[in-house]
Amino acid sequence: MRKLIPILSVLVVLSLASPGGAIVNGVIDGDDHPNVGALIGDFDGDKLIICSGSLIAPDVFLTASHCTAFLESIGQTTAFVSFDSELVEPVTSPAATLHQGTLHTHPDFSFSGPGGMSDPHDIAVVVLDEPVIGITPASLPTLNRWSEAAAKNGLKRQRFTAVGYGVHEAVLGGGPPSFPFDGARWNAVSEFRSIENAWMHLSQNRSTGDGGTCFGDSGGPNFFGAGVGETDVIAGITVTGDSMCRATNVIYRTDTASARAFLDDFVALP
Image (cartoon, rainbow, N blue to C red; front, side):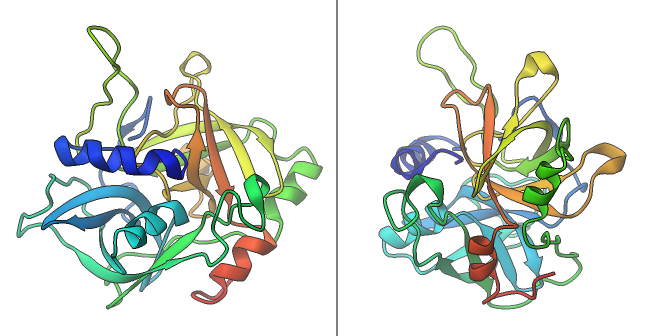
């Protein structure tokens, strides 16, 4: 769910009726990114995927605040995380591996709060009850890494790899658009477009060969690089973009002083 908070509740309602919320113009991830997982809420006994995220320490799962804030708004203080590459909703199979943890929404999260749209503090973590064994956490960037790179024109044509469990691009015709969902982890490659204080804009325009994200990918990582040049460094987390998931993936940067001040309470920063 990469759209902003007003759309989140609508998408959860949709997911209650049918599998909700993935990567557009991408490929099945399989075991390529084992540290990327699904954030799962409990809705009257049905465990449903609402967002994506990534392991950044053995017991810390990085995601978006609009995901955790939604769960908190309906009375939940805990959630589940799964790193299985394929899931079936509701997630009830004994074969599914679930890790329970406590939600930590950024205390200043709000698109009308202290930072407004320029910095809504849309970053959160789930502190897991037990450390995850056998999965290597992803890495975080150093302070202002992307600002410094952009100042030297070092982000021009730079590619990023988005990973998540959300819906795919819209299918049109015969009524309202539908967004197919298969419960699998997918990835796609996007090219840099522009940078702001808290945001980075990435192209996901099919005509230029780019892919990107859609509903259900919120909180998921966008790794610096692609293909043989991909790194394990999370440049930012998916938050928003255009409503039809065709043009732009807008990610919340993880290198800013604001993001790092929050993360510093949960993980050791580079």
